[in-house]
Image 1 (cartoon, helix red, strand yellow):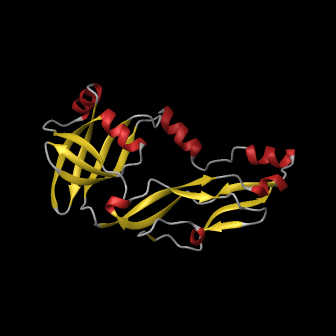
Image 2: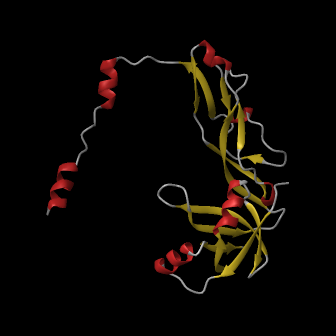
Length: 209
Protein backbone atom coordinates (compact mmCIF):
# COMPACT_ATOMS: atom_id res chain seq x y z
CA UNK A 1 0.00 0.00 0.00
CA UNK A 2 1.26 3.50 -0.84
CA UNK A 3 2.30 5.56 2.18
CA UNK A 4 -0.38 8.04 3.22
CA UNK A 5 0.84 11.60 3.73
CA UNK A 6 -0.93 13.92 6.16
CA UNK A 7 -1.77 17.46 5.08
CA UNK A 8 -2.90 19.94 7.74
CA UNK A 9 -5.38 22.22 5.97
CA UNK A 10 -7.26 25.43 6.74
CA UNK A 11 -10.48 26.77 5.24
CA UNK A 12 -10.03 29.72 2.87
CA UNK A 13 -12.59 32.49 3.31
CA UNK A 14 -11.02 35.01 0.91
CA UNK A 15 -10.41 34.61 -2.80
CA UNK A 16 -8.72 36.34 -5.73
CA UNK A 17 -5.25 36.72 -7.23
CA UNK A 18 -4.03 39.23 -4.63
CA UNK A 19 -5.24 37.06 -1.77
CA UNK A 20 -3.54 34.01 -3.28
CA UNK A 21 -0.28 35.92 -3.71
CA UNK A 22 -0.34 36.91 -0.03
CA UNK A 23 -1.14 33.32 0.88
CA UNK A 24 1.86 31.99 -1.06
CA UNK A 25 4.09 34.68 0.45
CA UNK A 26 3.13 33.33 3.88
CA UNK A 27 4.27 29.81 2.90
CA UNK A 28 0.91 28.32 2.01
CA UNK A 29 -0.71 27.07 -1.21
CA UNK A 30 -4.36 27.57 -2.20
CA UNK A 31 -6.29 24.37 -2.90
CA UNK A 32 -9.79 23.14 -3.72
CA UNK A 33 -11.37 19.90 -2.48
CA UNK A 34 -14.18 18.45 -4.61
CA UNK A 35 -15.91 15.22 -5.54
CA UNK A 36 -18.43 12.63 -4.28
CA UNK A 37 -21.22 15.07 -5.21
CA UNK A 38 -20.40 17.21 -2.17
CA UNK A 39 -19.81 20.94 -1.99
CA UNK A 40 -16.42 22.23 -3.14
CA UNK A 41 -14.26 23.50 -0.28
CA UNK A 42 -11.50 26.11 -0.65
CA UNK A 43 -8.44 25.28 1.44
CA UNK A 44 -4.86 26.33 2.13
CA UNK A 45 -1.97 23.90 2.70
CA UNK A 46 1.52 24.57 4.11
CA UNK A 47 3.92 24.58 1.17
CA UNK A 48 6.67 22.58 2.89
CA UNK A 49 4.28 19.76 3.82
CA UNK A 50 2.80 19.66 0.32
CA UNK A 51 6.27 19.67 -1.29
CA UNK A 52 7.35 16.74 0.88
CA UNK A 53 4.28 14.72 -0.13
CA UNK A 54 4.85 15.40 -3.83
CA UNK A 55 8.58 14.61 -3.64
CA UNK A 56 7.81 11.23 -2.05
CA UNK A 57 5.21 10.46 -4.70
CA UNK A 58 2.26 10.55 -2.29
CA UNK A 59 -0.91 10.98 -4.34
CA UNK A 60 -3.27 9.58 -1.69
CA UNK A 61 -3.38 11.90 1.35
CA UNK A 62 -5.12 12.30 4.69
CA UNK A 63 -6.45 15.80 5.33
CA UNK A 64 -6.42 17.01 8.93
CA UNK A 65 -7.00 20.31 10.70
CA UNK A 66 -10.08 22.14 9.45
CA UNK A 67 -11.54 18.86 8.16
CA UNK A 68 -10.75 15.16 8.15
CA UNK A 69 -11.06 13.45 4.78
CA UNK A 70 -9.04 11.25 2.52
CA UNK A 71 -8.22 12.76 -0.86
CA UNK A 72 -6.20 12.33 -4.01
CA UNK A 73 -3.78 15.00 -5.26
CA UNK A 74 -5.46 15.25 -8.63
CA UNK A 75 -3.64 18.13 -10.27
CA UNK A 76 -0.96 20.69 -9.42
CA UNK A 77 -0.51 24.04 -11.13
CA UNK A 78 3.17 25.03 -11.24
CA UNK A 79 4.91 28.31 -11.84
CA UNK A 80 6.59 29.11 -15.18
CA UNK A 81 9.81 27.36 -14.15
CA UNK A 82 8.08 24.25 -12.79
CA UNK A 83 9.62 24.86 -9.37
CA UNK A 84 6.85 26.06 -7.05
CA UNK A 85 3.26 24.80 -6.75
CA UNK A 86 0.73 27.61 -7.26
CA UNK A 87 -2.53 25.70 -6.76
CA UNK A 88 -3.71 22.17 -5.99
CA UNK A 89 -6.87 20.26 -6.89
CA UNK A 90 -7.84 17.56 -4.39
CA UNK A 91 -10.47 14.90 -5.14
CA UNK A 92 -12.39 13.16 -2.37
CA UNK A 93 -11.78 9.40 -2.38
CA UNK A 94 -12.18 6.43 -0.09
CA UNK A 95 -9.25 4.13 0.59
CA UNK A 96 -10.38 1.20 -1.57
CA UNK A 97 -12.21 3.22 -4.20
CA UNK A 98 -11.23 2.33 -7.77
CA UNK A 99 -10.01 5.37 -9.68
CA UNK A 100 -8.45 6.12 -13.06
CA UNK A 101 -5.05 7.83 -13.03
CA UNK A 102 -2.30 8.74 -15.48
CA UNK A 103 1.10 7.48 -14.32
CA UNK A 104 4.47 8.52 -15.82
CA UNK A 105 6.93 5.99 -17.27
CA UNK A 106 10.62 6.13 -16.33
CA UNK A 107 13.53 4.29 -17.94
CA UNK A 108 15.66 2.12 -15.67
CA UNK A 109 19.00 0.49 -16.45
CA UNK A 110 21.23 0.58 -19.51
CA UNK A 111 20.45 -1.04 -22.84
CA UNK A 112 23.24 -3.36 -24.13
CA UNK A 113 22.06 -2.41 -27.63
CA UNK A 114 23.71 0.99 -27.28
CA UNK A 115 27.12 -0.73 -27.34
CA UNK A 116 26.25 -2.00 -30.82
CA UNK A 117 25.45 1.50 -32.08
CA UNK A 118 21.81 1.58 -31.06
CA UNK A 119 19.89 4.60 -29.77
CA UNK A 120 17.26 4.16 -27.05
CA UNK A 121 14.16 6.28 -27.43
CA UNK A 122 11.23 6.53 -25.02
CA UNK A 123 8.20 6.65 -27.32
CA UNK A 124 5.47 6.72 -24.64
CA UNK A 125 5.83 8.87 -21.52
CA UNK A 126 2.77 7.84 -19.50
CA UNK A 127 -0.02 5.27 -19.26
CA UNK A 128 -3.49 5.23 -17.76
CA UNK A 129 -4.28 2.80 -14.94
CA UNK A 130 -7.27 1.85 -12.85
CA UNK A 131 -6.37 1.04 -9.25
CA UNK A 132 -7.39 1.62 -5.64
CA UNK A 133 -6.92 5.21 -4.46
CA UNK A 134 -4.52 4.07 -1.73
CA UNK A 135 -2.34 2.18 -4.23
CA UNK A 136 -1.60 4.77 -6.91
CA UNK A 137 2.02 4.24 -8.04
CA UNK A 138 4.32 7.24 -8.29
CA UNK A 139 5.64 5.94 -11.62
CA UNK A 140 6.09 2.77 -13.66
CA UNK A 141 9.71 1.70 -14.18
CA UNK A 142 10.65 0.49 -17.66
CA UNK A 143 13.62 -1.87 -17.34
CA UNK A 144 15.88 -1.76 -20.43
CA UNK A 145 18.79 -3.84 -19.08
CA UNK A 146 18.00 -6.55 -21.62
CA UNK A 147 17.05 -4.33 -24.58
CA UNK A 148 19.17 -5.35 -27.55
CA UNK A 149 19.63 -3.50 -30.83
CA UNK A 150 16.41 -3.80 -32.86
CA UNK A 151 14.26 -4.80 -29.90
CA UNK A 152 11.11 -3.02 -28.71
CA UNK A 153 9.15 -2.74 -25.49
CA UNK A 154 5.35 -2.44 -25.64
CA UNK A 155 2.80 -1.57 -22.97
CA UNK A 156 2.03 -5.29 -22.65
CA UNK A 157 5.67 -5.87 -21.57
CA UNK A 158 5.55 -3.47 -18.60
CA UNK A 159 5.58 -4.67 -15.01
CA UNK A 160 2.32 -3.35 -13.55
CA UNK A 161 1.68 -3.34 -9.78
CA UNK A 162 -0.67 -6.05 -8.53
CA UNK A 163 -4.26 -4.87 -8.33
CA UNK A 164 -3.84 -2.32 -11.13
CA UNK A 165 -5.48 -2.58 -14.55
CA UNK A 166 -3.91 -1.02 -17.65
CA UNK A 167 -6.38 1.11 -19.61
CA UNK A 168 -3.90 2.24 -22.27
CA UNK A 169 -3.78 0.17 -25.49
CA UNK A 170 -1.36 -2.66 -24.71
CA UNK A 171 0.05 -2.79 -28.26
CA UNK A 172 1.45 0.75 -28.07
CA UNK A 173 5.23 1.09 -28.35
CA UNK A 174 6.98 2.28 -25.18
CA UNK A 175 10.73 2.03 -25.91
CA UNK A 176 12.82 1.24 -28.99
CA UNK A 177 16.52 0.59 -29.56
CA UNK A 178 17.36 1.27 -33.20
CA UNK A 179 20.42 2.14 -35.24
CA UNK A 180 21.40 5.79 -35.22
CA UNK A 181 20.51 7.55 -38.48
CA UNK A 182 23.19 9.85 -39.85
CA UNK A 183 21.90 13.20 -41.11
CA UNK A 184 23.87 15.05 -43.79
CA UNK A 185 24.78 18.72 -43.34
CA UNK A 186 22.40 19.66 -46.15
CA UNK A 187 19.49 17.80 -44.51
CA UNK A 188 20.32 19.31 -41.12
CA UNK A 189 20.28 22.81 -42.61
CA UNK A 190 16.93 22.11 -44.26
CA UNK A 191 15.44 20.76 -41.04
CA UNK A 192 16.68 23.79 -39.14
CA UNK A 193 15.07 26.28 -41.53
CA UNK A 194 12.01 28.04 -40.17
CA UNK A 195 8.91 27.24 -42.24
CA UNK A 196 6.75 30.07 -43.52
CA UNK A 197 3.67 30.53 -41.39
CA UNK A 198 0.56 31.51 -43.28
CA UNK A 199 -1.06 34.54 -41.73
CA UNK A 200 2.06 35.75 -39.88
CA UNK A 201 2.33 38.91 -42.01
CA UNK A 202 -1.24 39.80 -41.32
CA UNK A 203 -0.78 39.25 -37.58
CA UNK A 204 2.35 41.43 -37.58
CA UNK A 205 0.54 44.23 -39.42
CA UNK A 206 -2.40 44.05 -37.02
CA UNK A 207 -0.05 44.16 -34.02
CA UNK A 208 1.55 47.36 -35.39
CA UNK A 209 -1.87 48.95 -35.65
